[in-house]
Each structure stands twice: as C-alpha cells, then as structure tokens.
Amino acid sequence: MKIKLLAIGKTDDKNLNALIETYKARLKHYVKFDLEIIPDIKNVKNLSEKQQKEKEGELLLKKLQATDQLILLDDKGKDFTSVEFSKYLQKKMNSGIKQLVFVIGGPFGFSETVYKKAQGKVSFSKMTFSHQMIRLFVVEQIYRGFTILKNEPYHHE
Image 1: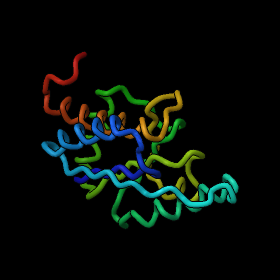
Image 2 (image 1 turned 60 degrees about the vertical axis):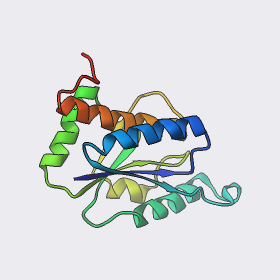
Image 3 (image 1 turned 90 degrees about the vertical axis):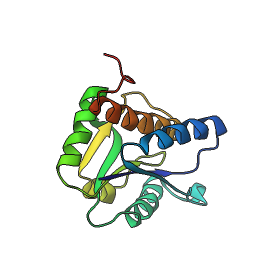
Image 4 (image 1 turned 45 degrees about the vertical axis):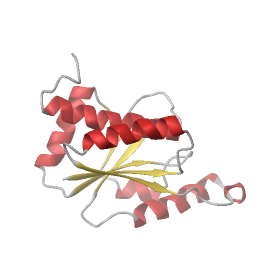
C-alpha cells in the first residue's frame, strides 16, 4: 500500500518543512509515502467561501486515482489514540487498497463533492491547527503508527 498526503498551499516556514522532510525520510523504511501540495487558488478575494471550497475540491479530486481510498482530515472525523491509529493503518493495509490518500483541505474545509467522494474522516484534534502545522502532525503520526506496528521504541505507553 502507498500513502499520500494531499494539502492545499505551500508551507512557508523552513523549520516546519525541515521537520516534515525528516519524518518523510523516516517513513521510507516502512511505506511508500508522498506529500503533494496543491497550489493556493489565485484571487480568492473574489470568491465566496463555497466557491473557494468547490475550486479546491476540483483540484483535489483531479489528483485521485479511481482505486484510491480518500480519507479527509476533518475536525468532525473519528478520533484515535496513536495506538488506535496504528491499528487503523494496519486494517487499511490488510484490506488490499493500493493507495490511501489523506487530505488536508483549505481554510474553509471541503466541498460537498469531496465529502461525498470520501471513504472516511479522521480528526487529529478538536482544536484548530494551521494548515501548515497539521501536515507535520499527520506525517509524524503516520510514522509513529508504523513504529508501533513494528514494536519499535519510538512510542511509549
């Protein structure tokens, strides 16, 4: 199985980028992982919230293959502990899907079309994080999940 993280807008902070790259490099030992950034939409001042979500949704959906399993990172999604999340990843691997795609939406979330296409929603917190910071958290938790599955000492209970 491959895992992809799709996100809208680049990460400006070089420190966050460095940390994300660190965990991406660590993940290579466990799974094929890709982080794909969709550029910010231009002239958003001229768009309503709904129009912006729809445009972002179109761009997100173009990045998917027919066999991909789409999981939205959404504050109304399922909450997991790190151990539960590792079991979730294991179930996905056991199910035989080719690619699991986690998506971080834009500032207003997802369009109805994206919600309808998704096969699940995961919440990383009830709190709100910047779209740049959540990328780091997601990549780190995927890494943590694989270290838990391999019984490696990274995670402590």
